[in-house]
Length: 137
Image 1 (cartoon, one colour):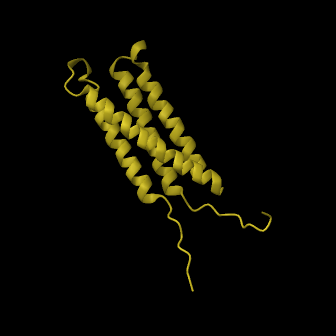
Image 2 (cartoon, one colour; image 1 turned 180 degrees about the horizontal axis):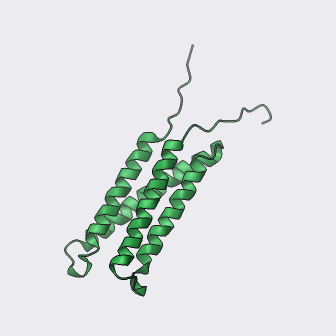
Image 3 (cartoon, helix red, strand yellow; image 1 turned 45 degrees about the vertical axis):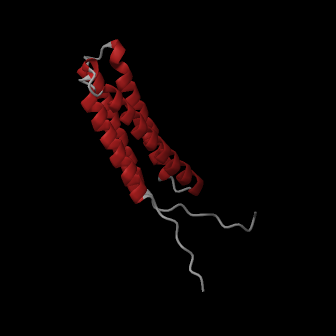
């Protein structure tokens, strides 16, 4: 494979920005969820989950803009999988908490986090660098 040319990573800065912003958004929402419950020990999972999602998305953003093709591919595709997972999880949490009086305070937060995740995933799909079509003579 000595003659194989090295693939160049495309400019994925817009994707990196989306990932960092979505990570900050989910981290803030998770901390807000714990703050709403006065940071009681049983509610800290909200902050931990939000901050964990933030860390994962920021790592993916770093991989995406690394300039190395393989790292770029791993970062973009792992981020897309994580974002799809976040949409699924927050949709399920919204559905399960809808109409349940004990979870009425969390329902709007789940909906906001779900909408933010849908927007982030949509932006990633729209901004992901496309493959260049080779010209045929």
